[in-house]
Length: 233
Image (cartoon, rainbow, N blue to C red; front, side, top):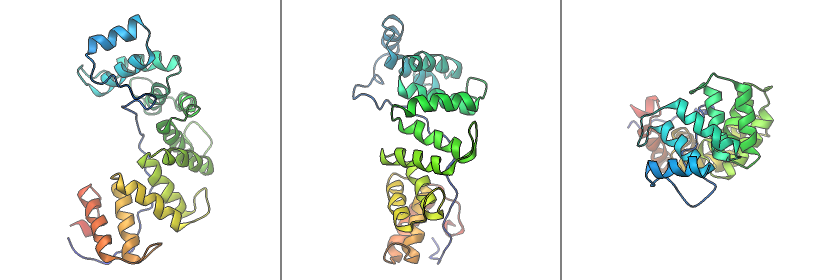
C-alpha cells in the first residue's frame, strides 16, 4: 500500500437498509430446529417467534427455496401478534418492495410499531426514511435521534451514520470528538467507511494524537473491506 498523506474524510451516510436475521427478544433460538418442527409451532401453536423464524428462512433461503412472498406472509402473521423483529423486517419489505408492492407509508407504520418496542433495526431504518424524506417529511434531527437509539444498542450502521452527523453538524451540533468515538465503535465492528475515516483522523491528528502507524492500520482494514480509494491501490 502506498503511504500517502490523505486528508479527505468520507462523509456520505450509509443508506442501505438493515434487516434482522436473528431474534433480539429472547436467548432461545429456533435457528437449529428442524423446519417441520418450527412449522408445527407456527401453525398449530400460532407461535409468533416460530412464524418469524419461518419468515427468516424463506427470506434467506435457509433450508428452503428462497421465497420472498412466503417470507412476507410469515412476517405478517408474526407482526400481527406484535413481534418486533417481524414488524421491523416487514417494514423493510414495504420499504424496498420485496415480495410486496413498495409502500413507504406502510414501511413507516411497521417500523414505528417495532421502534415502540425499541427494535434497533427499525430505529435505523426509520431514521433512513427521515434522512431521505421517503414516506415522511424530511427531518434530519429526528433521524439523528433514531440513529442514536440504535447506535447505543450496538448497531454498527447506526453508529457510523451518527458519527457522520456529528462530523458534519447534521441534526446536531458539530462535535468531532463525539464523532470519533462513534466512528471507533463502528470501525471495530467492521464498517469499512468508519475504519477509513478513523484512519484519516489518526493521520491528521483530528480529535486524537497524530499516529501514522494506527492510521495505516485502520486504512488497510478499510481497503481490505472494500473501500475504493487511490491509497488502496
